[in-house]
Length: 253
Image: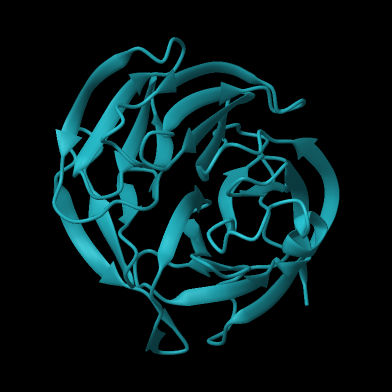
């Protein structure tokens, strides 16, 4: 997410133009090394600093990463009973959710010192900050709107593609009033209108899996995951235990 006034939208055209679902793909512009031991759950770029959440029990952490080299600059490991999931920037804090533990962890952005936490019901998968609210996924077809000051639920929205529900909504990135989401275990991303839940565009990112095939082992969980809006019209995309992250431009199929 970028808050710069001179930011450039990553959308190749207005995804809300028309009633259908736009079909986009990616153009890979660059790649950056990524720690292949990280079970990547969430990415967020703010003020030229890249933040990363890594998952799995006993391996979860929150990290500050050099966006140009992929070097892990600072890392704090989570308690072994916690499974880290998505994260987002809220002012001077990072907010990191957990999978089945119902705990939303608050961290100081600069130092990664813990600042407390909130609790919630259900699972936590992805999260991002829109203008006035948080959006959170739980692996179903729902987005939950939450208050960024106390994490209380505002409302829930059902996500659809051409009128049909779509499950396994995972990592989220709020961009220009819309939300981009990974669909777990697939190489597709979707762009959602969070007010209506309607999917406005589907992005085929299968080229990225082709680029890392043979280097990520045979674990079926090592899938595409992680979206960061770079603010210049491009996105940073990654995957679980992938050795690279990729800077991409969205283009019409």
